[in-house]
Length: 310
Image (tube, rainbow, N blue to C red):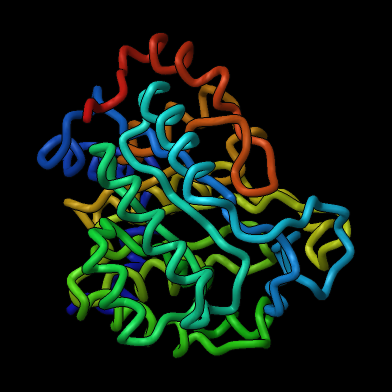
């Protein structure tokens, strides 16, 4: 098993060497001209009891977001059809919960999963903490992936979230894995963490057994009203280092360039694709924050890239 020191050596090697190694590994396992488009649907917004300092949906902060209860299955079906028409192959559904209760809302989420899968799309949900029985029900419905980000390093975690522990996250991932569902897990950079925390996050992800099939790398979007609203921007090349290191450590996984793309130049996104990112979120919004979905087709065309087909 790779050590944290070995991850640090990869991450901190000369930048051009890092890019070359990551790009070489990427091409050995993936078509560098193809990218997966995913659509993220906010199926239940706001009033989450968790205190994640980056999240505008936390009930602990006044961020002025629109709050609403769980969407209908029909609304999700319509969103999935629109996403599929726009080229997305995966619909990701997020509910602002600490974790689902075994009630009619969870029954409805299970039905949403079945509906999305019936359309020939991959289905991913992020519902917070899961127990074994809930993971099994989602698996039986055909869920493709469960998103549960580690967010940051184990050492920095309590600086960002106090209402649950890093170990709680690992337990949910274990339940998902045991149910036979693929794992989507990554993190966020730009929350005031040190470089060693980014290295610690990547080490934690790479040493999951097996590593996540999907690894979203998010750049913090500071939202007014959250404790991180005044966070200083991170060096863009740190984002590229994170993407490249993730690709080297997890050669066969999808590395998804996720939140924060509104603030990224085309050149930065292109460098991330070169370094191994091969998935993005399409659409105009990621849960509650803006996303440059309307310009993606032009960017991909300029780069000679195209969306993966269903």
